[in-house]
Image 1: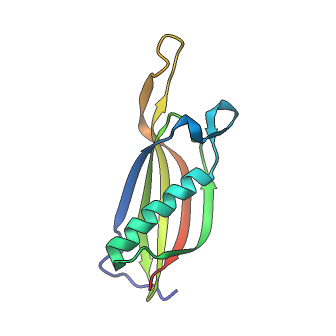
Image 2: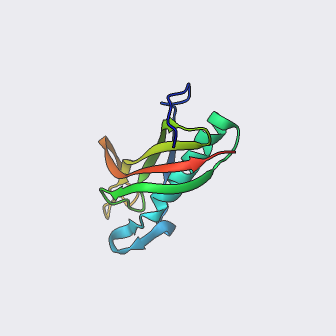
Length: 131
């Protein structure tokens, strides 16, 4: 990739989403790692629309790290940051944070708590290609 710093380098896009119980895949209401990667695709799409007026195509991930669990009942925040721009390629760093987590009890099954600071759940670096 012929990297250069253009006017869009440093642009970030963030989406928040509640993780419903229908996405729990493992014991303990754990959600599989692909859930976060799907969110990374969504924020990368918006980032490409903002920088290039096109949804772009995901070419590869260079690095994916699962640092903490994501569970049903969480509120997660997916962020994409454009870190380098070539002629047609865009290098993006991704972060998925858990910003709130379910804290149910028998007396309060819908209880939740805001996490301060948010919990870093997944990181990745990827490349998208635009026309």
